[in-house]
Length: 348
Image 1 (cartoon, helix red, strand yellow):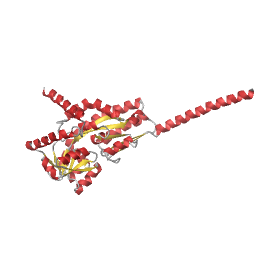
Image 2: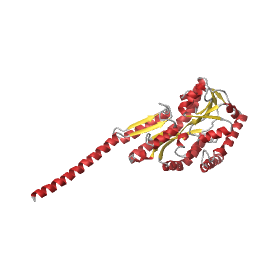
Image 3: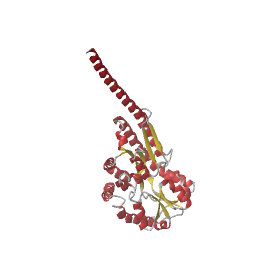
Image 4: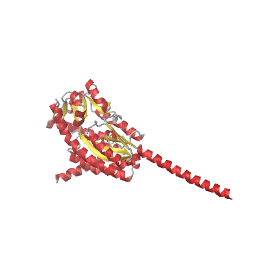
């Protein structure tokens, strides 16, 4: 009986010890997981640019809130590939997030294209802001349904045309070869049907392509043209606000769900603040970049009233082709409805 009692106690103690060891192992694994936690963000923006600095601030907030030896890495200058490639890398877990323009965001949710691909639609930033904020809740829900969380909205200036030779009319560009995003076959098809020559490339290929004559025209924001030195090989800029470059910082829902509520709140607040700063500073940098390039040899070509009518006529021809192909018809109509309401309100 004594021996039996002893063996029962031993087995009970052994079970308690085993449970304790399992708990300790779980805690150790959890600690190791936290210590090795990484948040990897990809982007095309240049190192040390405004956008990069804002991403680093968001990362520092996450790293501090996360604790342990969590690491935050930002891969700039397209080192993780083009925007379509970065969207793919997020899906397979190689990246946890990315700061993308509409070119990459539409790989996740096509309706986002409505904010960027409709030429000469928006007259100013006030209109862009109004339409984006009206569409923001539903748009963010669409991204969430696809497994991504939108942390901040930004923009990077207006697209202008940088070319080797001076050009003022739409027809002037028909003899030239345009840089086109490799991930936008619909846009290329539309351009070809109107007599233009798109050359699909990745962003990292732009500078060597224009230096070698593979392309003659780069649709680009002034800031990017300055930072990438495109203007040296394409020293003519057509001064029209063709379309805004709109973007957002997104992370995968899996990454978001792994954060504690406290970490999420901290990251959300910092990201929202970063978005406001990015938008304000990026818009200011448009004029600053143009002035800097003019001092270094850039020629700014401004269309007269007649030439501007030709550009507006071209945009009107493009809208029916964009609706239902590059932008879902429902979203296309929603943008126009918001703009109509905004302009009617301003007219009062």
